[in-house]
Length: 130
Ligand code: THU
Ligand code: ZN
Picture 1 (cartoon, rainbow, N blue to C red):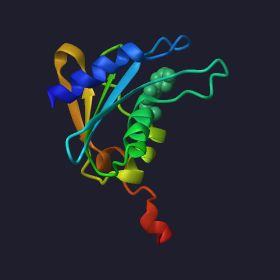
Picture 2 (tube, rainbow, N blue to C red):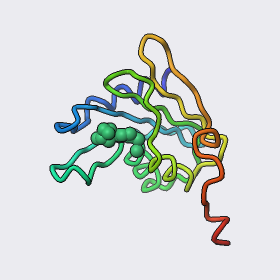
Picture 3 (cartoon, protein in one colour):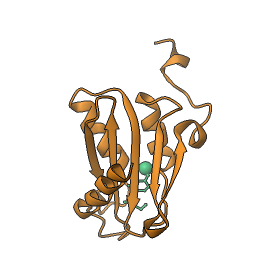
Picture 4 (cartoon, rainbow, N blue to C red):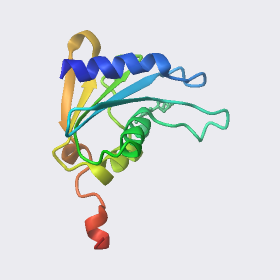
């Protein structure tokens, strides 16, 4: 687990966040143990920010992975930041309620949640009968 958090922390260094100066890194682990990382990438229009979790899962899906065990998230503030609502929904497209979400709290360690805790009763492909 600490390894996954370490990978999320490492990804912070790739962040492009000149506007918020709030750097975020994420590392998602696939069912076969492969790890993909992402960071936030902001834009001068203030709207088109790519979120770290979104980039990590997008890279994994592009590489052919659709099953995930866990994701770790770290911010430059080491403040235990959790994935935002948009990222929770993006994760729910490919991950079940049991996905572990580890949130870096710096020297205090980390908090672990499940996706089901952070985003209960969300819409999924099952609702659309696909
Ligand atoms: N951010 C993420 O990368 N992931 C989240 O889920 C929370 C927010 C980024 C977006 C923006 O670049 C900065 O954090 C401040 O909101
Ligand atoms: Zn987000």
